[in-house]
Amino acid sequence: EVQLVQSGAEVKKPGESLRISCKASGYSFTNYWIVWVRQMPGKGLQWMGIINPDNSDTRYSPSFQGQVTISADQSISTSYLQWRSLEASDSGMYYCARRIIGVGADRGGWFDPWGLGTLVTVSS
Amino acid sequence: QSALTQPASVSGSPGQSITISCTGTSRDFGGYNFVSWYQQYPGKAPKVIIYEVSIRPSGVSNRFSGSKSGNTASLTITGLQAEDEADYYCSSYTNSSPLWVFGGGTKVTVL
Figure 1 (cartoon, rainbow over the protein chains, first blue to last red):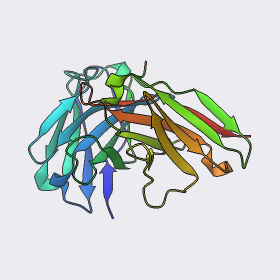
Figure 2: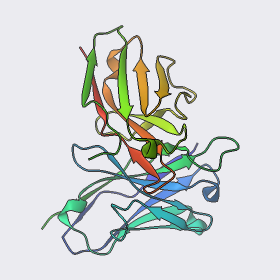
Figure 3: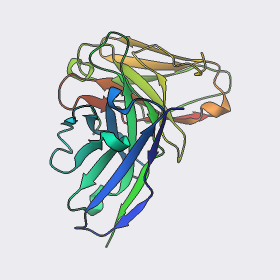
């Protein structure tokens, strides 16, 4: 069974650093890009960025470029989302998902499955 | 503000059909048919129900269908059931930056 297991909820103070994880199982980790999506409380989904675990090629949304770092460790089939200095506005639910593309395609795609999410709360 | 525009809410009675629109620009859709739809129940992770405009993943009810005309994609739910009450998000690959965009989401209520 294909699964993405995300790390547990975090409570942090402004200015602290944080790294959350997304461990893949049930498929070849390097064959599929991993995407990260934010959902702020009561709000919609925001596409943050995507990483190719095979070569660490990473693309960010302009809204998140420079604010977070997405990485991947092939040896343990895990992707990470990292902050150097958290702000209260970083509070929210963070999902990882696997990107799938159609047969013969080299772009586009959809996201399946999704992890259960990691809730990040930043408060003084 | 989301790149793709969806109605905030849509409602219908059991058995009826409803359609959720997802409007963007030609840039948002990137000239491709890489539109997907996601269903999200409260407190749960999203789940894909339509990809590449109109393809249903295995296991998704055939009451869900997708289409696209110009810069508007649509999700139709026929034979509305209580279990369809959820939030629905459209998404599109843009081939620019950001690579993907989501709609603001539509809350479906079954009356």
